[in-house]
Image 1 (spheres, rainbow, N blue to C red):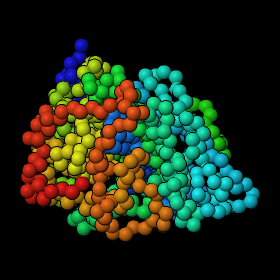
Image 2: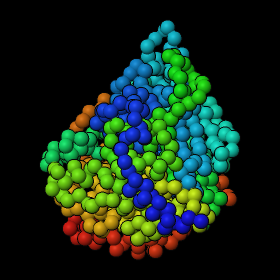
Image 3: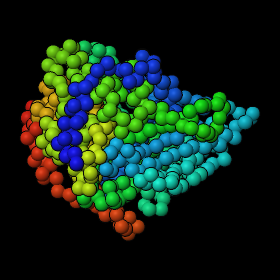
Image 4: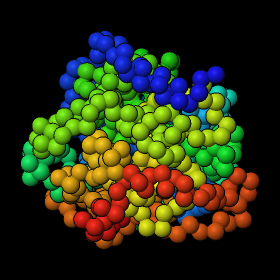
Length: 535
């Protein structure tokens, strides 16, 4: 049987066989990109309704024993983008996939399909013809509903809810004087303790997109502006008990899961079609943030969106972009910070295997690889790009926006919370911070956008209400409220309903993990030089 160490060697051997980059993807898509976050690949940039912008996965801070997944679509949605605004596509399938045994195939699939009810007809162009005070208000002329289905271990899909209301696009205060009420009415509790929400929300991703102007102007002069302030997205949020996604339902033995989202379209699309028909193809995929934007080159972006994680390790062109990434070389050219030597096996751990000592990588800690699950068959483990989360790491009382690099083991790349500053974390990671234990001082300030422009909530679905006034591009200094972390909220005692089988909290000691990472992450150095990092 292949041992975990051999699995690590097999991955590095695949990297060494890299030849003729891009041959595997020849002819699969255009060779240019729109050079903008949330529009990471040419084809999906032209189809925003199915463009997955971000994925978040974290232990629910206020509900012990539950995990929350948040996935967003429809980038750069302006609040004044009427009269049709931003519905979910009715001829697409939206999926959240979970791998618990490390074979890069989904063990749990949660599937949403949407339906539209349009009563405008030939009478009006308005989205609503009067104040909308409830989710089923007659004045709301256009609305959507959804069906949620789930499949576990390849079994047939089971319908969990159908006809559930979607929170509408936020038109404005005259049309929707109390949008918070509409949102609360779209938050549904299902049998088994599941919570589900679908609807519009403020875009929770925060960053300065001028990174694409030769890395912030080539001299860090173009930083400090939250490029996504004021924009909305379409959000799907799901909260389920640990036991539904952990291998064999046993989170104590098998706490690590891998998560990614996909969107599927009908292989043959008919203009004006209002439902899904025939064979479907995958058109969007997302696990870790920024991978398709800044790791995958333009010629491979559309192809990456079309493949499943179990194919990643077998495609040399994909392997090479991780083991010898472009971004550190660009940073060296602009800022004279030497690029770490290839092959970058530390990035293989962060993005492709999870952090573990069982694959022979350079980061000597066991944190969020499925290889750390007691019941995983090591021979079946396959390196792949997905967002990995250890459900056993307790909720952090004082979250650090730099996540694991800031000594906070519950943060990115161990899952992703809404408040994790993934741009600053990713820049430090590609510069080798996780391997050397030293943050790059010249880049320590990052993009100077450290928090979202709107405060997140302390309860499911956590995302901020959608913006109701026109989006603009101001220089944003986040408020103290916006800087607060949802994970800072104390975990509450589960209700009697929530404390059934599989719904109890898992209190796993993380002292061994912290000890393994503590020697690497150089937290004391950071705090002495920069002072305490605020969440």
